[in-house]
Image (cartoon, rainbow, N blue to C red; front, side, top):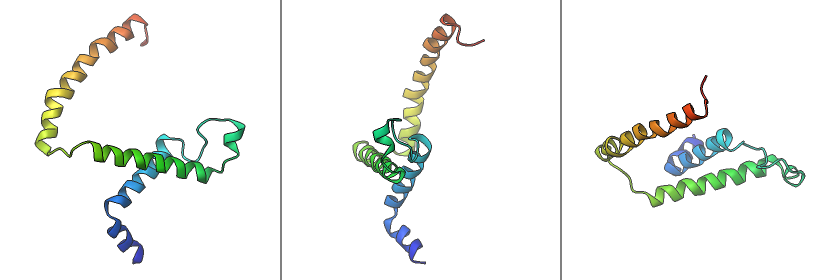
Length: 105
């Protein structure tokens, strides 16, 4: 079909657009305005959705261009040497705040 070949031709860009739409729908409120103000409520939901998709697409392309691609062994090393100690160290202040302010029953 022509649609399948169009998506194949676009390749990664079609995935970027699809992911931007899904992230807009799930995380940015979809077609709802950013603030519940009368002036924002006059703008149609399709315009809001398109603007949010364009914003997310811009951010997605910006991150892809700014950061290098890591190999599998580099990702494993990053997780083992950086993120594991960081997450274990983060347990101390979170538990301290939780106990200090009695956030958990």
